[in-house]
Image (tube, rainbow, N blue to C red):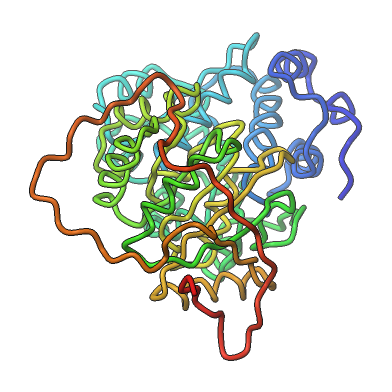
Length: 426
């Protein structure tokens, strides 16, 4: 699909074009150029595009145009999102695009009190952006009225599947008017999502602007085979590279996120953390510190990270290899957004080899192996510490490691034979 030369060619209202220009958008992304005319025409849409390709604007702009033409009323648009962060991000985008209009929206998600959300819903808003669980709470309390609903959007549908939200989504959909426009956007299209589209959408326009299950082509991938107990030491060395300006690190568990954030901070780096056990205020603070550059590093679990939309992330580090191959796509898609360049680094322990090979199979090609020649890959595990963890010392802004500078080398794919060889430092 070709990009449109400008947003002016898409038939958007002048007030929306003014908002688009104020944000700094000039040329529509492929998904925007394809989806906006289809949504304006009233068609149901299935949009498959890589993370960071501009899906939010692809559905918000034509929805806002529809609302401008139909005038005020009760809630007419519902956007379902898998995470709090993504819901908040969509609400922010809605406010930016709706400047100069009377369209109002509210984000409804857990982790915060229900009072403000309840007041907004009872007063009436045009657009509700919600996570499924919290929305069901409000529906059971009679706080929301969807009788005038015109448009339903399922954003990041594959992630809602991963997080077990599909039963909740079906409960919500069954309570909505049957005559409506339905838009579904997803980075990947696993079988359950395909089945969902058949039951929810009517004669949809199918838009696939990039190969499914593929990260942006502008991402450079590399893997560092390393023993599990040496991952933190290796990460600290890598963080000392001068190009590591804004680094998102993925771990598998909440406990590991806390521990790694503490260790990285003790090494002299400014690091925040975000996971499901942190309060919404703490998550927003961590994301804000990362976005404005106060923290060089943000350590996150998959559940908390889907809504992280931060411009300028230079590197994504998989401290733990994801067990689900498509999670790799979602993780690394946090960098190289809007056609920027980015790098994805994976730290692979020997016991993670099977999961890593599944990722390579999904990508259709091996990921190049990289090593640090002066890093001791055979070091023994450190003795257990009996003392305290010491101060977190954040320093002033983007801290730098006291470790020697990075002098690594990237290597091409190695012989496959009976499987990917595990680097032992020999």
